[in-house]
Length: 290
Image (cartoon, rainbow, N blue to C red):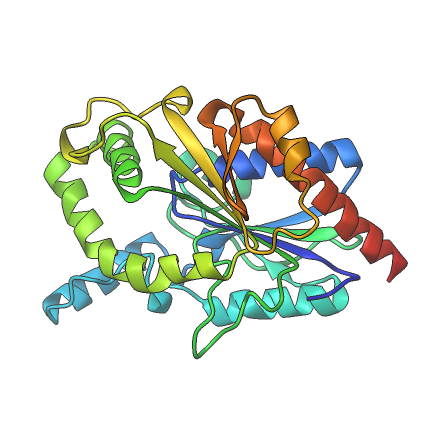
C-alpha cells in the first residue's frame, strides 16, 4: 500500500453491482474534487475475443470444460500487479481498454472484441480506481491485496447472480437458456477457486440477498428488484465504523453481527455514499500529508 498514491480496488463478477459502486465512487470523486485514474478488469484479459474463442476450443479439445474469463490463466494478472505496484510507487503506470461493441470501438478507435494500445496513465491523479473480476487475487504468482489501500467486494447470492446472467445473456445477447447454463457450469470451477477467495481479502463486502423465491433461477421470469432485496455489508475490521450513525441515516437497517449491517436493497447506494465518502477523504488526506 502507498499513502502517497492510494489504490481503490472493486472486485465482483458482472451483474453483481460493481457498476453501482463505480457510479457511486464517480459521484464522490466529483463532489470531493478527486481526480481518479480508472482501469477496468477486462483490459487485463489475456486474449481478445477471437483468441479467447480459439483458446476455449483448445481446452474443450483436451476435455477441459472449466476454462473461462474467471480463470487465472485467462488473465494477465502479473501485468495488473505491475500497474498496481507502479502506481503505488510513482503515481504512474500503463492502461488500455477492451472494446465491447462497435459503439465503444468508434470512440476508442479499435474494433469490437479487441484491445486498444497501451498508454500512460494521465499524470497528476489523486488515486487509482480499479473495477473488475480480479482486483483482490492472492495466489502463488501475484499478491494484489497488498498494493490496494481499500478493497471492496460486491457479490449477490449465487442464485441471484445466475438469474441476472440468464436474463442479460438471453435478452441482450440472444443466447438460449441451455447455452447460458453451459457457460454457468463452465465458470463454476473458476468461480469457486479464483473469484470467491478474493472476498476474504476485501475490506468491505456488499452482498445482495433477494427476499423472494429464487430457488430455480432457470425459470425466473424477472430479476428481483432492489426493493425485493436486502444488502448485507460486512467490514473486515469494524473499528472506526460508526454503526449507530449508519443505522440512524438508513431507515430499517439493522446489525446482524458485530461487523455486519443489513440495509434495504433500495438504500444500497445511500449506504455506499455514507461509508465510502469518509474513507476517500481519509485516503486523500493521508496522501497529501505524505
